[in-house]
Length: 262
Image (tube, rainbow, N blue to C red; front, side, top):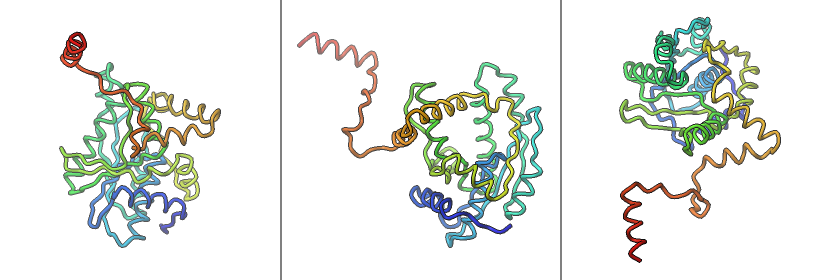
């Protein structure tokens, strides 16, 4: 396969790698390859980076088969990675059975938890020091709203995160790419995504938030940019208007007693 990536894509991915210091010489990076458009582009892009940069690093890819009833074409992923000269394996993890046995738990949370665990164990087993995921800019904005609307917290994932329990660093080189840019990129390269085997695909809280962001942006074109800007820390503390942390019972009692004495 001839390695090529339009300059705009190369620049955005390189910006993320450099700004957040994602990749260093001799890194051994494990790619979480689900077969969707995002992870396919990430795998291709890192193969391009491996060829075009002097900062040499190695790549492996792992696909987790959650063993849902729906068909999952992993053979095409094997061929894809072979063309890119990236070692690739498929691991079968019976996440479907866990979801069936624990119906009270959110299926997306359960699936993500077991996927991450399997990927981290594999990374440690093969001496990888970093794990690369294909989360993009839209994912980050949607996660910000998911946390706010469904858990009452303000926050999103970091472009780079160190996991002290596993001694692994998670990197997300696509964080400056919009989802539609990824769609155009895989069409340009003739890359065909694998249909997700997930029975909940398209019927999740994330999909609800995705539609919400699209509706809001259609009515207010700058809405997405404002949400993306809200993910950034600002050095001007005066721009932070969040309430202080809630006091616990003892602190409230002390404040009450102080107030009553004054």
